Every structure is written in structure tokens, then in C-alpha cells.
Length: 350
Image (cartoon, rainbow, N blue to C red; front, side, top):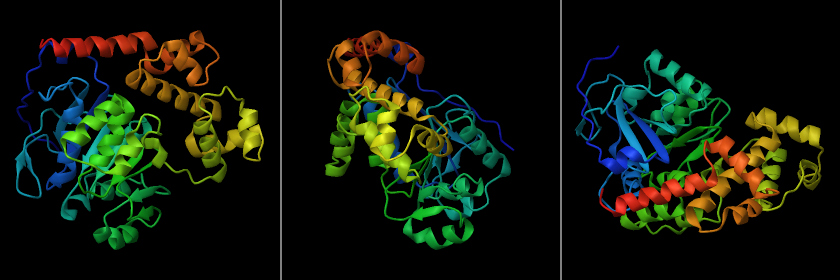
């Protein structure tokens, strides 16, 4: 199935070795993939990955993989070699499948389809670029989901995958851990991912250096705005209205009864709707929203931990610290200190 290859890994300095990355991305490049969206994504990651412009993989890390484990060619004719064998389960925050010419993505190998199903079952978010959506469709991962496809392939896509909800007016769509991007530069998608995991300052750094001055992108990556999940639309009105209430009452320790009453339902119906649409209870979903918002405040502000606890609806700092550690594996103070120490290390040139 795969051929042997020699992989070259760029040398890492002490900063790269010592800093835990905020964002880990694995690219699976299919033969004849489209170069532009891949380049837009990885260059955005590159600018967010360190404090200066030395292209060090510190706060962001990424790997190049191919289906054959050997060199392939982009649709423009540029050859590229993988940096590691294809191994993705549990290793990345996102796996990006880069498609291109339809001749390579209409009939993907069965082992790749199974790998994608296993990734989704393991709750690893998958991003399909360009015609990579055909591979996800073949794997059955787009049935009943919204997906963004290029207008030139819309008719064939609908014919092949009639259970998918096809959109041609979106630069990308996230639906339950499956993100589709029809192509373009993918810089807006990258900015949203970076804003979520690395903070809005790093996302803005890439936009400015790449000379992107799109007001909509800047609006979505502002600290006070919602992260990329804002584009995740559930096909349930109760869930959508409940999530809107949760987002607009982030700093209020309201009860689930208050959420249910605000949208004209009861707690039991609310619980059922969330479990069937998000696979999570409303309490767990709301807590995750609060903790993600708290993480962004730790990244982008100098507010004290106690202030952030109250700003994200926790009753006190101790409860906030407890849940933050459960969610992210470290305390808010250690999270902030680690990032601060990393920046000092980078600034010192070591």
C-alpha cells in the first residue's frame, strides 16, 4: 500500500524543543493537490508559530504526509516530499486532507476512507480542502452535514452525495468536527483556527504580514467575538437558540432552567436536543464554551485569574481552576506562565 521513504525533519532549537505547541496540524497531501489553499493555511501557521519571523515551529507545529509515504506532485507540477510517515490517530488537533484534481479524489483507496472514519470516531477534527470533500463524502462523513464546495463541482458532488447539504457561498463550513473549504487562499480558515488555539494577536499577526485587510476576517478573530465554532450550525432550532443564549450570557452563572425558559422549553427537552445534535449535555457544552473563552482571555489580556473566573461565569477562582485543569491539563497560571516563558526564551534568541 505504501512505499518506503527517507524523511527529513528540520532541526529544532531549544525553544522548539521546550515549548508545548498550542496547535498541531497534520497535512495529508493527495497527489495533484491544489497548492494555494495549502500554502495559505501553512503560511498563516508559520507566522503564528513564533513571536518573530524566523519560521520556527514553536506555538504551532505541522507535518506533511502523503498516501504513499513517498513524494507526490501538486496540480501545478511542484513536487513535494513528506516529512513523516502517515500516522495521525491521536497526534494532531486537526488533520487536513488536501485534494485537488478530481481524478485523484473521486475513487480514494478504502484504507484512507477507513482512516478518516476512525479519526472522526476519535473526535479528531478533519478539514477537507478543495476536492478533499469528495473523499469525505465517499467515507460517509458528510451525510446529513453542511459542506462547502466549489461552484464548478457542485452538480457532480450533489449527484454523488445527495445526503449532504451543499453550500457554494461559504469560504468554509464546520459541521460537527468536519470542516470543508472549497479552495481559495484558506487564510480566513487559518485565522479562525489560530485565533481559537493561539489567540487573536497571533492570528492578526499573520493577516497583517500576508497583507490581508478583510473586515470580516478581522471581525471573526477579535477577542470579544466567537471562535470558528460560530460557523457550526446545528439543524435544531432549540439548540441554536440555546447556544446563542449561552454565548451572550458567558459571564452570568445562570442555571440550565434559565436557558430552557428563555427559549420556551424545559430542561428535559433541552437535554434531549443537545444529546441528539451535539453528543454532549447542555451543561457540558456550556462549560466548554466558558473554558474556551477563559483560555482566550488568558492569551489576550492581563486580567487576573479571579477576574477571568467571574468574567466566564464561574462562582469563584477555585472552581474555575479545577475545571480548567480538567479540560486543558494544567492550571490557568501554569498555562499563562508557560506562554510567557516561551516568549522570553524566543526573545533571548535561544
